[in-house]
Image (tube, rainbow, N blue to C red):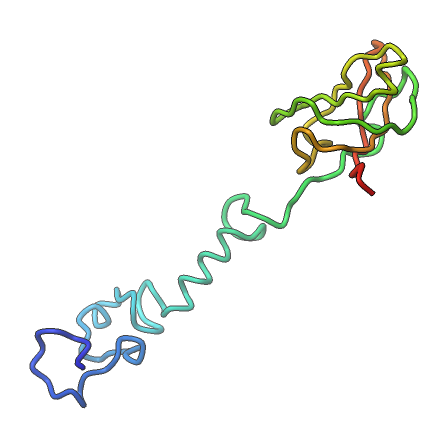
Length: 154
């Protein structure tokens, strides 16, 4: 079957578009603006588009990129533990937003502490109702907070 409809050529003369990487009869190639022919004009062939896409989504390319990041651990000394560290506890994420969430722990509730505040950067990919292990601490104002979250199922 001819791939180019409307052209009056013999089927042996018609090339598949993938085979016609550099076409001397292409008016766009002659102007240097062909997107489909290899090594000419803007396009540079089918691998050129893939290279552009990879550079857009990589950290080294244009923009900030996608992937490769994940969650970065907060630096040492980021958390204000001047009120004291209460140790490692297990609890359930009860509320979760983009920037922060809350964990409830039966042990900490029995000690008189309400829900434990946790930053979104510590929550990582954990969802609401996940069971987690965490280090509870008090900041300089005496508010209870969580850090170093780990899966509570291990």
